[in-house]
Image (tube, rainbow, N blue to C red; front, side):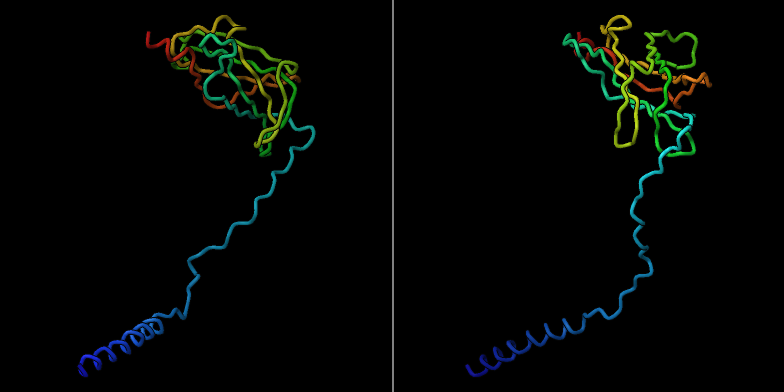
Length: 190
């Protein structure tokens, strides 16, 4: 019995001593910061485009799927934001002119056999001006009903845009072609 209490007493002393030695032995004394780079500076707003600057580049943003504004189940309105730039300035800008949109059947955009589905010519009075998180934008709503019908089989089409400045300078086009889905999904199942 005496022997058990001696063992119990020793084990009660051993456990706290072991924990204390572990804690004291695992202490960090030096931290190396050489591989961590400093935080970047806070972002600054882009400088505004100088007055009198002329657009020489354009970017186009097309909303996902066209909207069905007449409720017949076929998408009929394509919403497009056009951003004009005067490079090398990074901010978009407003400029008067005409936006010409051409909708072509899917295929090689430069091929001669691709047929045009329609074209819109929108002057400054037909385009809304607004602001997005990217800056000043021209906004257009292209209705398929204005160029014929919205009743297409489920298909993709290429949307091209060209900006014709009001002062007669050479037209500006964005790089690439923008894909748009036409027709309704349920029509493809029938």
